[in-house]
Image (cartoon, rainbow, N blue to C red):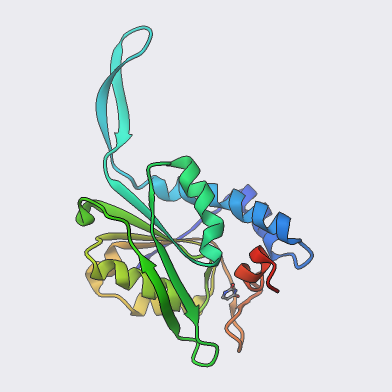
Length: 215
Ligand code: URA
């Protein structure tokens, strides 16, 4: 089973409520998703390894620390773009990969139309964070994580707002034991279910539409 972490924080709960509210307009929706991205980034970045190096304070020599591995974030187009600012602001050295996946409306299966991964020196020592705000069927997140394991990435994280039990179950059934051990899903809420159209209930509606005004 992949590790599932639910981010419990009073401010995350408040911003998530703003996102859920159907009366929240496009601007405030984007502001709230951006705020939450900092909490998710801070939480997931706790997993990065650091190395020490000597620095001089105005008073004496001491140890400084810096992250010693490559980090790539991979927003799933479109809604994943809403998380990118927080992740880049907190750690500007991240490289950004993009993956375009849409759900076939009839089969609800993921269809990949774009994938670009930045050149990294050492894929085995690169951590990749998939930005997928809504884990509904889990199809897009699973597709993206599989693609990363296929190209040689060892450690994969998924940052999300809301997961449905159906999506988490599918994630748990889709990877080998060793892949699952190297996959962590961090969500802000674990909702009730999917409806017959594949929307998370209670959820927040279509995150991409609400961010980009395409409702
Ligand atoms: N994608 C969304 O944006 N919302 C859902 O409820 C399900 C998938």
